[in-house]
Length: 359
Image 1 (cartoon, rainbow, N blue to C red):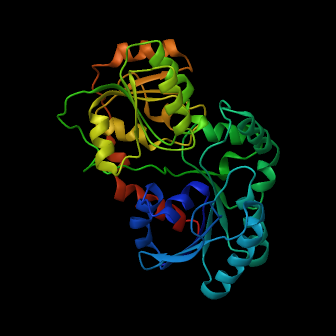
Image 2: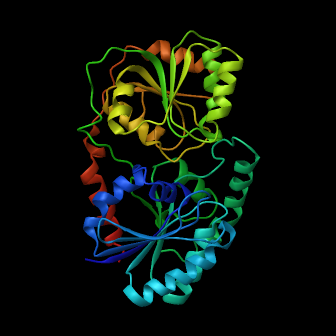
Image 3: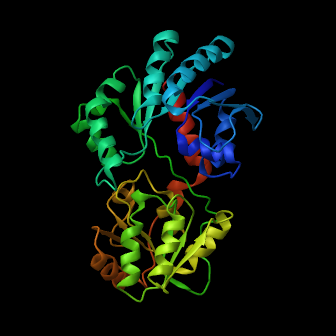
C-alpha cells in the first residue's frame, strides 16, 4: 500500500482537534485501511490543541502552532521533514481562499516533486455572498485560481455542476477536474423511522452567515410553520437573542446533536428539511434527509442540483414566499431516491481508489 500526505482546512482540523468525532473523523475511520501511513498537516485553530497525535494506528496528525498567515511556512518545513522520513507518494490539499494551503503545496512540490491534487470543496461567495468577506474571497479566487492550480496533477471537485462551472469559467481546463464525491451516509442509521411528525421544517448544520439563517427567521415570522434548528456555531447566541427579542414562538434552537442517531431521529420527526445556504460545498444533510424519506427544500448550491428534483423536494430561490409555497406542495411527499450510491464503505473505497490511480 501507499503513503499519503493530507493537508486539511479549518473545518477538518476543528473536528480532529476537538475530539467531537465529526464527518472527517468518521471518514478517516474507514479511509485509513487503504494506506500504509497517512500524515495530516493542519492549520492552528484558536482555542483548540496544537502539536501531534496518532489515531487509528497509522494516521499521524500534525497541527501547526503558528498563526494562520504563517501556515505555509509550517506546511513547507513539516512536509519536507515528513518526506525525508516517510517518502509519501501523493499529496491531497484542501484549499480555499486566501489559499494558504495551495501556496504551501506549490512550495513543497518545488522541493520534493511529489504529485499533488487540490480539493476545492466550494467557492466562498458563489453563487451568492453572505457578507463582504465572502464576496472578497470570490474575487480572490477568480484572480488567483489559475496560478494556484498550475502545477497540480488534478483538482478534485465534489459536485458535478457548481464548482466545475466556476473553475472552467476562470481558466481551469475540464481535463484537470476530477469528480470524486465526498459525501456518504450510514444507511443503518439514516433510514425511514415510524415516528410522529413534530416539526414542519428542520435545519441541520453549522450556524454561520452563509447558511441563510436570516431568511429562515423571516419564514418563521411570516408563517405558522414549526421550525427546528439543530447545530451550533458563531451565530447561535445572535439567533437566540433574535428569537427571544421578537418573541418568535414557532422556532426552536436544539443546539449540538450528540450523534448521528439523534440527527436521524430529529429528521424523521420533521416533514421537510430546509437548506437556504448562499454558498455551500454539500451539504451532507441533504442526502441524510433523503435517506430518511424526508423531502428537501433547498437553494441551488453545492450538490443540490445533482440530487434534488420534483420527486424528492424543491429547488428554490432565496425567497420567503418560495419556502412557504414549496412546503405546502411537498409536506406529505415521500422522496424516491436510490441512496445506495451514497453508502459509506463503498463511497470511501471509491475515494481511496481514485487517489491511488493518480500515483
